[in-house]
Image (tube, rainbow, N blue to C red; front, side, top):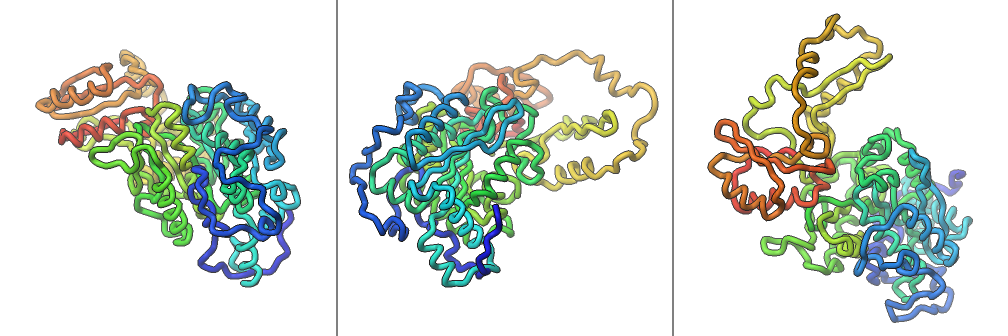
Length: 516
């Protein structure tokens, strides 16, 4: 796309054009206080009935045989995603669709652009995108032009889901949103489409979705690929972001348990993130609180089908689906996390309304780690393979993990490896001869909880509320409760790991370590 020829300007504090229109975007709750000049110029055919919809646009139930959200029976497949986007595009003049990339296995990654029928015309989309680019650059456009753009031009909002293939409900909620915006006849929908261009990416990882696996087919976690752009799925997404630069970006995920997280975020927030973006993120969070429904806010007595904020999910690591759109595009980038243990209908409905827990190593008993490898550097062909005994950058940087990764990356190419001696390595030979431990599921990745031996009865009673499938072993004065993990789920994706640890802490059981 050719660069805009308009002059430069200084961004005022009210930076997000039309951003007041985005709160509760997916809840379909009317929030707009005004309409664009384009919409004000024509008589409104909209209806006050929020359930009024065009009969010509196929509903999810007509295509899938079941509704999305309330009453939903199962999650949709990749083929159904593509079929539905094509059907809605064919039936609605508010929607245009495309393909932003192909997956490793050759599956298309489709997207939909939905707004009013004038905004989705190619020339109008180019103009709107140019307006947003101008607003992002403090060096161009006069103050008068900026004010006119903020008043008259729609904002661009992204709803992206399923970057982790096993976290599926965001996809279904995105399709439900597409239907409401494409078919709705209410004044709230008309007002939203007049003031927003919504980019919907139902799945960022179709291969992982098919396999119910976090990573793509190359085994890569694509929510760690925003800057390196090593995966073709990521590359296509970033090019589409350049084409339609977001002012709001929603990245829909799932976590363990039955709760729901949406911002405001936990501290720390990276110093490069602008205060204006954080302000809008927090405003959207307040609107989401008002429209969440279900059991409202989580507290000591309400622990399921409820929401929480200011906990676990920070905005510090500059490599996620919230921080990158925020710093790279000036958007209000947000991560939403819905508990995967909830029924599919509740997961999708709550995602629609709004659109880690993890521990590594031991807190005590450091002797258990003595003599074990943290990093293995293996010569492979003309290069090297580096194997970490843990995930050093799972949720954010940490001092030791960062140094290990940096040293692995910066080790001089072609340098002589003085660490290896010729011949058979004794440690490798010993490991190869050792008996293979029993596989407790997920490639030897069970959940292990260490408590004092005297606390075993209390621990076991609480664990049995979540699962009866456990093994117990003892060493010295510690007892280890091992829970198989057949799917090899990471802790933040596990259906009850977070709730289990919370229950143990609420019962004041001292946890010596949790490995998940």
